[in-house]
Image (cartoon, rainbow, N blue to C red; front, side, top):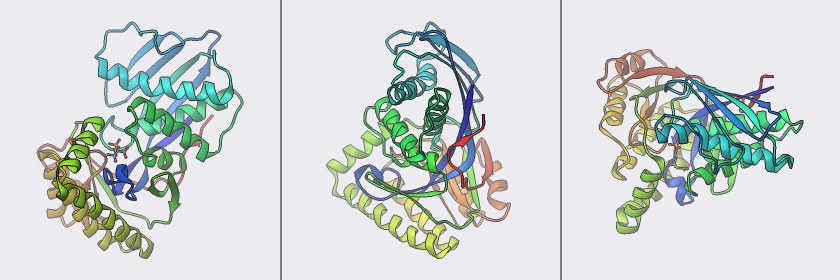
Length: 328
Ligand code: PMV
């Protein structure tokens, strides 16, 4: 068996605007998905998932996506577990040329699903790395990132940027602009995360912003303004100016709210962080529900979030310097 892990991420700046060619800066965090892959002697794929912020379950299905798994769980749960794994396995088959190989796949993750922390990218990256290594091929991080991007692109009907998958594969802070992805220097950031227990629908939220942008000039200007904030943010990162980073994150959150992708619970958590004197706070990822990211070196934000109605969990996250990690 080969076992790999890959980190989740927060967006310091630039989600949604990145879809229209503006730069974005995600940053990998030490919340990881671990994927074990073992070759089978038939074509089937068996997925066992635990700790996906959902009840653990097991599903076994044929070697081809068109074979419907026979299992009594909700469709979205099933899609979450099998969609990304299926496509990641297709990438493994295509890169190794072993088109008929089957696998037992075990997933264990600290990253809540669909909450803006890049759970699907982390699962795809770790699955591709473990799957290829199980067949004797070791890929470079950039190749894994590219294959994981294709995985998300297929599963999300073309609504995916390279940000999550590149960040998860390489670790650290990353700058993404179109197809250009690179790692950038970042100071040690005092990251605090608040989670409302929910999830946003990335596809729907991306489409809603697309429609708004087509209808209103303000929305297209707002996307441009987010791009400006990202550029200011890059400068602040370079200078190690955490206070300025926080201020810019506050601006970025306001603009995301203007685009309609925040929610009552996300706003409540952002304001709790601000009232606790965090340097700044914003939603992370597609929004609608899920997580906020705040910068605060003290305990105040974490404590305030724990007492905020609508906040289900609050925790500190370390920046993950290492991306995909080979454990076995
Ligand atoms: O919610 P997440 O972590 O999948 O992030 C989505 C970020 C978007 O910019 C809204 C879409 C994308 O693929 O970049």
